Image 1 (cartoon, helix red, strand yellow):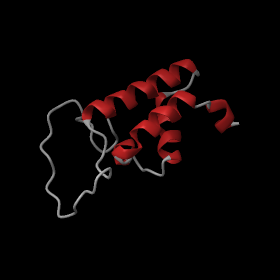
Image 2 (cartoon, one colour):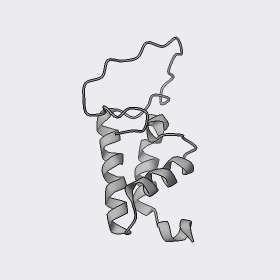
Image 3 (tube, one colour):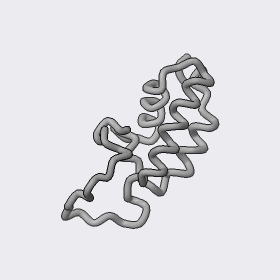
Length: 92
């Protein structure tokens, strides 16, 4: 689920836009978004934090207002970031 699209997981019709998406500028697909959301929960559980905290730190680190706005080309980097994230280092 994203802040802007609480219906992730449900079939959503593509939005009509006049702006062209270049390669890598597309948002995460449903599978990638699910993986990132699962990593938020896993990191939070491992570090005794709220998933929303992990989400907020990740969004801030990638300069996005919502995880769904992070470009698809950054998917691998986001996964590595979450696997290496140490909230104590950031929050203290």
